[in-house]
Structures are given as C-alpha cells and as structure tokens.
Length: 426
Image (tube, rainbow, N blue to C red):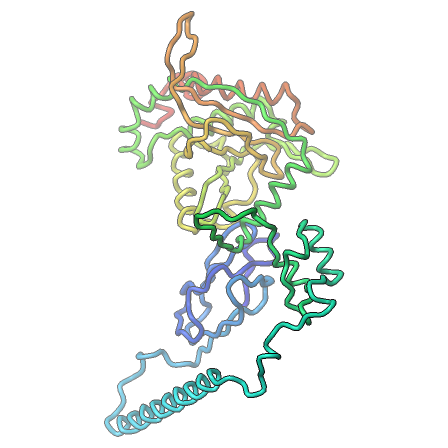
C-alpha cells in the first residue's frame, strides 16, 4: 500500500500510530493507521483484505506515494476457512503437533541464549572494564565543541562516551544544561515528539510574526441585547432546528456585514498584488485532540443564523472526532477564534496566513459601565482584531471592529432587519 495524497500541497506525512500489528489480518477499508500531515490527522484505510506486513515505524516521515505496508491478499482469514473432512482432521492434528515442536525448540534456543548472556566473558578482566583515561578524556571533538558552545554547556559537565572518554557529537547533542542545585522534591521530566501538525503550526506562527506587520486593536461589546434574544428564543430555536442559538452565529454574521463595509480586511497579499474577495469564507479556530484546527465555513454571506450554527456544530464535531479533512480546512478569507471558552479575558490573536486579519472573542464578564448617564452592570466581552498593517490601515481596522461592535449591540436592527422570527426561521 502506498501513502495516498491528502491534498495538493502535501508531499509528506508522518505515521502517527499503527492501529494494527504486524502480521494481523485486516479487512478492506479497515482503518490501519493514523497519519499526520501538516494540516490534519487522517486515517489510512486498508485497500484490500489480507495479512499485513508493516514497512514503516511510528514516527517515520514518509513521502506521498511511498510504500508503508504490504497486504497478502492470498492469505487465508484466521478461523474463517471451511470445515475439513474427518480424513483431514488427522493431518490437521499432525500440523498442530509440528507447530508445538517448533515452539518448544524456539523456547529451548531462547533459554540457552539467555543463559549465555548471563555468563561472564572469559576475556574480560577487571582492568579492561575500568575506564581508560588519557589526554583525550573529557575533550570534545570539533563538532561536539561547536554544539556545546551553542548550548552554553561546559565540557567538564559532560561525560564522554567516545574512545578513552572523548566527548562525541552525540554526547553534545544529548547534553542538557544545568538546572541548578537539585531540590528535595521530584525532578523528573518526559519528552514526546511533536506531531507534524503541531510542528507546522509552530512554523507558521513564527513566520507570521516575522513576515507581517501585525498590529492588534481592541474594543468592548455590551452583550445585553444578544443575551436577551437568546433567553427569549433559544429553546424554540433548538426544538425547531436541532441546534442551539449560540454566540458564533451573531459574531459570524456581524463579521460578514463588517467585511462588506471594509473589503480590505477580506484581502490577501500575493507578491506585489493585493487580492480582494467578494465572498466570505470564515475560518473558525477549533481545539481538537491533535491540536488547533481551523475548518472553514464556506460562503458565510449566504447563511442564516440556523445555517451558521449547523455548520459550526458539524465542523466542530468532525474536528473533535479526528474526521476533519484537509479540504475542509483549506482556504478561508477571515478567521474568528474564541479564547473565551477557556476563560481568556484578553489576548492578541495571531493572523492565520495567508489571511490578513483575525477576530478574537473572549470571556463574558459582568462589569460596571456608564449607560444613559448612570452606572449599570452589563455582560461585557472584550474583542480584538489583529491585522496585517501592510494592506490594512488603522482607519479600516478600527472601523471594522466598531462595525462588529455596533452589530452585536444592536443585532435586531443590523443583523435581523427588525424581523427576529424571520431571521431565526421560526
């Protein structure tokens, strides 16, 4: 079996986990492995039924089109053959005896091998087992010295495993800087390999910080009007449409309206050109079991409150269950991320390249505000817009966020055209 292509731009995947053992019998279309690409974790189904032989280890990076396993389609299914005649039963018994004899021989051979390992070598002497010291002891090789200098580690703190105690490059690579005088408590540590998806996300986040002129502007939103609408209609909405009336539909449609007013925010840079889109593909940041995923709501400008909520629920469930596809996360012209679900009060979200802006939602807290000349308590959310200043000016970024604020504080007029029942399809 060869690794299929998960998407146009993906040339390499990583074997995250084998779901079967070497030598297992697999059925056609059975999930045999999970593979990580730089965009998603996908399941690899068996192309045929048979005995599988694995050709790659977990954690191996393999190119698209490379063979990762072999499936013997001529192998019989264990326990699935026809019942044999009584004359064949005798031969089957002989075969079982022969297998038992072979197993006994293997066990005897293993026992003798283990006994040999336990016997001390005659040629070894106490003098040979002692470390041999010379001028090279504790001296790093040129490559090892360079690595130690980069890490800021003194060669005296590294034990060499090379000839006569010389410090090799591997010793330097594996050397750890001092953590100071040990305390009295536990000081253990663990290491785990980052998935390809996590490594790719890390690379993209760093590149955004280095390659864009990213700025963030902030505002606050009084969520009282949305709270009132949800309290009044959420039960009827859910009973009729099968999805809840959440905050994402209000924010998505508020962003669609603001993107119409400020099209530069719905743009991207391509070399020396600026591409502006007349459609709104809204990416929604979702935390999945394998890390951050950003599925896309296509043509959000054509969706109602019900349509947005249904799509958000569908994509979130697929991301959570690890079933999201690369196509569902490809594209997007603007992103919304909600750190508020984790309790974040305020943050500066990082742009999702190659997009030029991202809106950050946060938690909702009752705060005192001035309203009609008096102090009132209201549910307030801080919102943030990070944008690429190379193509989005301050006037447009601030205007966009103010437009979002206005729509959220007056949704009945600006998002529902003063007809709540029609907007909610009730």
